[in-house]
Length: 588
Image (tube, one colour):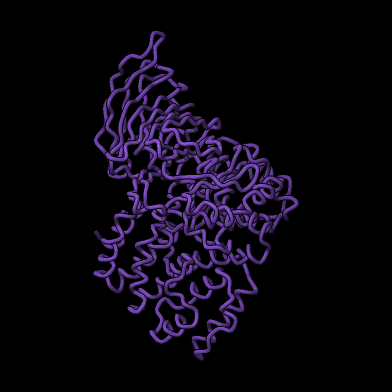
């Protein structure tokens, strides 16, 4: 990689190969302070090191010499609203450079929670979210997935709190106020992660376990009890797990994502823990990242399909192996339906921007989340054409060949042609391949996932909308069946329809966040005020963007004043990433 438009770094000249962090957590000031020491590999002539920063206060920059450390000249560029400030360091090809700094209380990659925002209500909590380019807000670093480095960290914190990182943390929850961790495998910056709080460990298997607040730990370990089996089946399919342990950290509800695949320590939302394992495909997804994304990484965010598309495909194979073909088919059908609905109203020009060809090289696949789904669909199509007996060894070979490397779409396409297409001529045509790699949208010949149970749900919904007869057996439907029922329902329903559903199935106030998301979206679009109090409570309790943003979008179209009122009350418990997204929706 020579350039990443999301980073100021110049990896063609110099790369960080190892990072040493020495940090102190100050909860009263809501800052991290300390130093980041970069071990550098110079690959070109030059006298500068450029690091990404955002709202960091740089206190000193030093270069290692035979006699110790010497001060280096540095300057911070004028900040860009999205990219932050380039930190320019004048060096003499130093092999080690140390930056002393402190973060801002408003760091976009950190959230500091008051005790009232935690399950226990007694101790504070802090956690990071570095993807996509938020690592630069708490570490001066080459913040691009094209640069990988190992790291070690020494962290001091209040002694009553446990500190964990995306590294080898062990399983002992002994709290000392001083912690040392090591990540021996090279990772990109967006996988740097840290958390501190009232955390205890609950084992799942020999290589897996759960970290969580005491009130959540045992429930989460039960909910995620199939993790070890997921690891086993993935290893059988796609090669060894190369990261030592796989633990999960269950964060407070303000965490903005379902999960974050930080190596050795997936960060997960508590909204997955509902008691019936119906939402554990998120765990399968984050585990799958241990092969795609973490092991083989896209070299810039323009090629995110190499991360999320491959991961969604591997996730589905894990779900099928552990929970059965029908469950996996329903999960795929839900994702495909959501994508097709988003794409249907787009003009050809809009489609080219929202969902270009996979081998595009220019646009960021992130505006509608459709790009990763197209990538997963493409891999499923290849599997269907070549058969699993041929495709699975190919994919395993891909993970082996590019392990611990960052690549682009061109690297994958070259590997595809050499190791799958050339040995099996005539299975796919160049026209078909170009439809996936170079043309926008989903190819017309792509076969959609079909579920017999979803077909029955569709018939029941259509009958209910026509006759008013409630679906028979809906009281025992799975989460996936309810999502299908609601996802394919009209966005706006009459008040009597909503009242009838709610009386029969008590959807208002449901503890299932996925069902609540779609239910409250319809409630908001339909201006169904009897459910507004619970809708507001849901938006105040949960900060996961997938669950709250669709509800805010619907409210913004019907009652922006109420949406703003709810947001004002909920905002103190939201992560900065979620706050910014809601502000954009509400035009604030």
